[in-house]
Image (tube, rainbow, N blue to C red; front, side, top):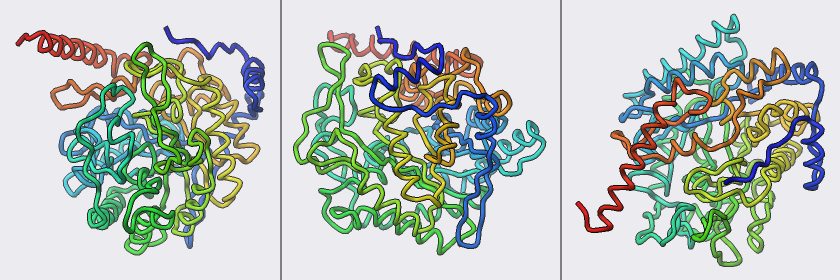
Length: 496
């Protein structure tokens, strides 16, 4: 039975618990002030271009794993983005879209190519249309498409950015025995060719009508692993200048091809953390055995890798800004091996560990990193993350962070799956309906990890709060998981 952490009836109880844990949690108590702060528009200025975001709210890129096998968005994808369009946020960050077929994390991940541009264009158009129907106009609505390659977590032909003493053997926190084969190492020639595929994908995104693209450099995927590849040989590894080469080359080539009027953004994992595993004896989690100094992560102290060190991330962000990036979405962690770092949770996904720290400490880590980065780069629009665990108090805290200048936009991911109108409610009332807010119980992650489906992947959403969309789907996933477990058990006993 998971311990309950979120027991707060009032903002004062939340504030006191944060103080007990050793940090000051900024909170705005006035609903009117919350509304006013969240409604503030955000201007993002580039060289000869200005983008106006109509309020300070963003939908994070949350993968639905519900595309077609050719990479086009499916019916559930359209449903999600209609709901996001009507939700009230003015920055809609479209989910990770692979730039090549071998870069997909699952067979239903979106993939942008000539054959899917029309459907992506229709997806964006429906999102804008529902926003206009809900609010009378789509002025100030900014749409960014996230581009990715899943690297060692690609479902077909995985490529690692670096040899890793732990992840090569234990790529998932649920691995009890080491894997027999490590993924192939992405060669320098492979990476150089892949740069061009990102540029083509960005050009197609503009054809589809997106205002800009985001390079996904977080969560252990290829571009994320590259910036932490201190032990990698060759021109893409070793010193930070080499590890940043891929991203900076891609950004430079995109600007050269598409000009300065196309927005460049980056969702950057500024602290990788270390791989965790689930103890065989119980549901506790602990770091895997690690060599020291630990030369494979980003944003951490190599001599004490449990400690966040933003020295390199801040250097990298300076280079990204010079390359034309105007929005930085601050992220962290690797959901395959340390989900508590990136997504503080109340209840773990099945097969995962109980949180090894109070979730508020994870929230505070996100806030600390975002504030440091916004302070170092006042011209960048920094999107703060880590809010969903705060449930119905999300925007009392987020508005306080906006007011004191620690961020310029607040992003919500899981919370928007559970309660897509939360942005509108916050703007109109300055508060949320507690019965509707995400409780971080990890049902969405359960579906994302469910593979016993005819298409190789169950779609993901929020079964507790979106029964119409996902109630039957989670039943099917559980039935399929039981059938698969029974089949494995039968084979283990010599059965057919």
